Structure formats: C-alpha cells, structure tokens
Amino acid sequence: MIKEPNVLLSFINMKLRDFYPSIDDLCEDLDYSKDEIDAILNSNGFFYNAIINQYKQR
Image (cartoon, rainbow, N blue to C red):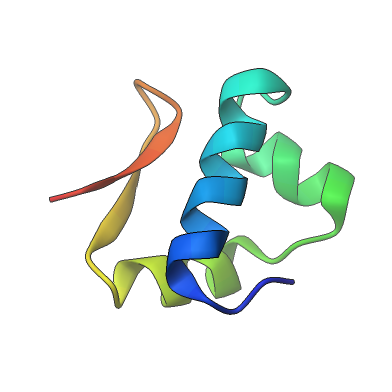
C-alpha cells in the first residue's frame, strides 16, 4: 500500500469516486486495511465521510 499521505489520499479518493460505493468495498477488493488507511490519513488531517464517500480535511 502507498505510504505517502498525499499520494494515498489521491489514489483512495479516485478509487472511491470511480469504482467503489464504500471504503469497505475498496478495502475488501484491494486487500487493504481500513485501519492502516485511517492511521495514515487521519494523522494528516483527512477523515472519511461516508455521505460523500471521500476522505476530506476537517
């Protein structure tokens, strides 16, 4: 999995926008850990918003 926060953010949001209805579906299909994604993105100020299905800055 991508470790650089800005690249990860861009990749995950693109996948969510274009291919997956939820973060859980993305993680299951790509064999990613939601906890690991959250740890990287949350520590950089980005949080998942299920309503818009994107990680956004608070």
